[in-house]
Length: 107
Image (cartoon, rainbow, N blue to C red; front, side, top):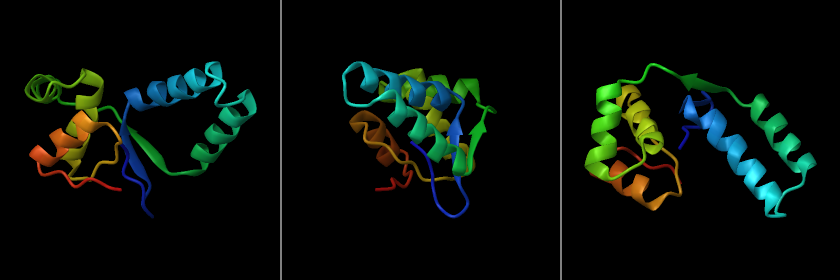
């Protein structure tokens, strides 16, 4: 869901919460220890990730409706479209929407 290269990444505001939620859920499932979460967050602080809060509400809602996405996932598409950036995601529905919208998908 992020564009990472020598210039860093751009993510929607929801990313901050989604990432931390995923880490805590993996702790609960026994896949990560608290120390692993802390190490992951420390690594991420070293990356140049900028949070984009300038969403176009109408576009986000239209994308969610048209592609049967959560509004959260549609926010990633909206950022990619508005900024002309590729997208990285393992989510099948989000990837299909990106293909439909001619957004490059990073692997």
